[in-house]
Structures are given as structure tokens and as C-alpha cells.
Length: 405
Image (cartoon, rainbow, N blue to C red; front, side, top):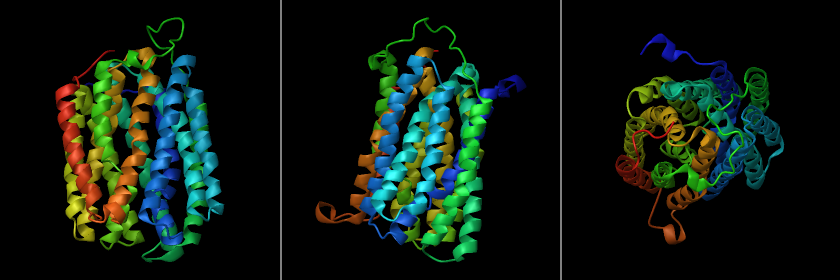
């Protein structure tokens, strides 16, 4: 690959910087939120599933609308800036949350922001680079996003260690101290995107913006979304991976180091995997990632020790890095340029709408009560591995190697 193929325009770097600082903020809270719910507020796993699933479902519905609006208005930048701003504004409310419905409402507001920004930002990235650098651009963006998670987790480790040392459970004052620290990078990310990005005219787009009919996205895109939906039904919130590791004996500091390792692996893999998806058919990179996921979830189903959970979570970072750039680039490939934001919104909406049933099902299987009494903590991971295998076969058979534009 020659040097010019590695060059990326200003929009990619501006969006990457915004995602970096936003993820510094988000990761300081997101990964300890299940512990706040379980350790401080005393909620059961089904409620954790409701909180996480509702949040992601909310984001997905908003992404669908935001993607359509971005294509309709031919506006990417300011919708993305608004989304980052909404998420930043929601975070201070955690300082006064004392019940799980309140936490759910705040998480809902944060995910509304994610929904508003997601599709326009992804379309802005796709608009800004040629097709042979699309995987690289999305991979670099994802690497920056995850590097922010690494820094956020390092700050979290420092704050938790200073506040409560090696305690096995999270304490309320520690969580609220993390909220305060998270506010600075959250608002800095908004400012960087506002100052650094600019909208790009879509080459070859019609003079009048399209009135989007979702069937115009085409059968190739539909086949990919269907395979992804089957996969997502078994892909419950990562909160369950965290709780599984804690259940296997890992304390709060150990969990944070595990998450740090995961994000380092994720960061290292994302950009090279995105570049690989520019050189080989994107679906093969995605297929490999799904196979890694199936192996990791099967491992979590049978894991017996904290050390095994930590090792599996590190490999989980390989899966995330492999699929991050390849999936986004494939979505952009499969539709016309003027429908990209709608495609990203539709894809994200379908995936996210399944987050609630996936997470609620995982919580019920884990809890093992009532009709689910024959199951236990291993069951959600066995289901995830099985559905990932089915989805991989669907991807292999039904999805083209590369589509349109």
C-alpha cells in the first residue's frame, strides 16, 4: 500500500478527535455503570438488561431518523455536533441519580445524543474519502475512539484506586467523582468537531435531495442487515461480560484493568483491520470477526476462573477491532452515495432495536427464575455463540463481497 493511500482529510481527523475525547468521558462511566446499578443501587441483572437495552434501542430509533434527516438536508456536521452536545449535557445528571429508573432516563438521554450524531458522522467520513480508503478511514476513526477509552479507563483506575483502593464493589462517592472528571473531555469533544469539520458535497448526487424510500437501499444491503440482525440477537450488552468476570471472582480494580487491556487490543487492531478491508473483500474481515466472537462467547460460557475471563475479554478486543471499520465500510459500499446516512441510520437502528430483547433475554437467562429457572450465568454466552455461527453462514452465503459506489 502506497503512502497516499494512508492520507486522510481533515474531516476524518476532526471526527476522530471528537470521538477520542467523547470516549474518554464515556468510558469513565459506561463500564462502571453496571457496577453502580448492582453494587450501589442493588438492582438485579434483569434491570441491568432493561437499562442497557432501552438505552441502545433509543439510540437506534434516533439514528434512523437522524440518518434520513441528514440525507434530506444534505447536512452532516451540525447534526453530529448536536448529538455530541446532547450526550455531554446528560452526564452531569448522574450526580443526582439515586434510583435505577433515574439512571435509565439519564442513559436514555446520553444515547439520544449518540443516535443523533452516529449516522451523519459516519456519512461525513464516507463522503470525505475515496472507496479504496474507506476501510482505513473508519478503522482510524475507531482506533481514535478506542484510544479515548484507554485513556478514560486509566483515569478511572486512578480515581477508583485513590477513592477506595482494592475494594471488591463500587462505592457511590467514587462513581460521582468519576462523573465530575468525565465532564471536561465530553465538552471538549463537542468543541473540536464544531471547529474542525466541514460538510462535503456529495459527488454525483441529484440536485434535489431524495425523498428516501427504504426499499431503495436495495436487496444487497437488506441481506447484510438481516445477517447482522441474527448476530445481534445474541449480542447482549457488554455489561454481562463485566458481571460474568465479577462473578468469576474479579474485583473492581481487576475489572478496570481487564477493560483497559480490551481497549488496548481494540485500538491496536482497528486501523490495520480497516486497511485490510480495503485490500480484501470486506465481508471476509467481518466474517473472521464474527467467528472470533463466537469463540469468545463460548469461552465465557465455560469459564471457571477470573484469569480465563480476563484472557477472553482481551480476545474480545480482536473481534471488535476486526468488525469496526469493515462493517461501516461495507454499508457505504452497498448503497448509493446520496443514501449513505439513511443506510447507516437503518443499519444502526436494526442492530440497536434488537439490543433491548437481546439484553433482556440475557438477563432472564442469567437470573434463571420462573420460566427461565433451568438456565444460569453461562446461558447468555452459549446463545450468543450459537447465533454468531448462524449469522456467519448467512453472511457468507447471502452478502456480496462489495456493492455499489
